[in-house]
Amino acid sequence: MSNIIYHYTYIITNMNNQMKYIGVRSCSCLPENDDGYMGSSKILNEVMNETPEYFTKTIIDTFPTREIANINEQWFHEHYDVAQNPKFYNLCIAPMGFWNMKLNPTPAEKRKKALDRFNSKIIKTGSCHEWNASKQKQGYGMFSYDGKSKPAHRFAYLLHKGDIAENMVVHQTCENNSCVNPEHLVLQTKSQNKKNYNSTHVSKEMVEKSSVKFLYRLRSVRPELEKEIDALLMLLVTEKMKDEDDFGFEEIKKESYL
Image 1 (tube, rainbow, N blue to C red):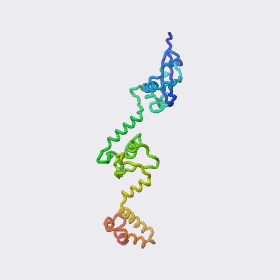
Image 2 (image 1 turned 90 degrees about the vertical axis):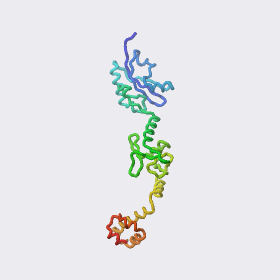
Image 3 (image 1 turned 45 degrees about the vertical axis):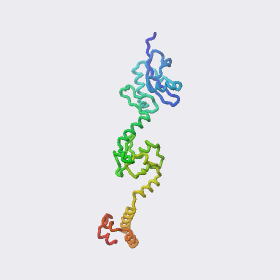
Image 4 (image 1 turned 120 degrees about the horizontal axis):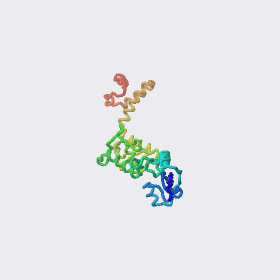
């Protein structure tokens, strides 16, 4: 009986989806005759048990000692970043071991974790789901996911309803900027959204007040239009506007316009 121990690195490939596993092995037979060994990964073995015919094993290289073989395995693991690379079954980079491995969460696990964290920031009041965390000054909630911050109502739509097509915006039918209730979220084009905003957020008084401010500024740069501008001001300026005095001009000048 031979006392020779052979050491080699290998790669197992799933020919159905091209996912791979890189490992190291020590055995008493020649590596090319070690057909019965197909890796020690629990996840890999579970997949292979379902469809063993899809998997092939290729010897990468052989080595005189296990230490050198381990170094070769570690080089491949680091080179391909196997623990984070979705194309590999490996759960850790050698020689870390399972106690320090970084698991790649499944899409379902990742979605559940995000949903739990998202829901923890919501207070349900009546029909609206109020965002109770970070917000923009306009009142829109902000949620961090995958290292990126995005509007909470957009994330709620993605989470519950699906993808958002390019050039589409998520509109809150309740007109509550803090609401993330998926039942209140619909997709709109930018022009539709702007029209909705103007119809619900921009009042007649706001439009008239902005026009008066513009006319005061226009009068100072187009003196030849003084009579025409004054005529418009006489129609637009209200007593309330006079009292507020927020057009950026001195009172004496404003009175002269009127």
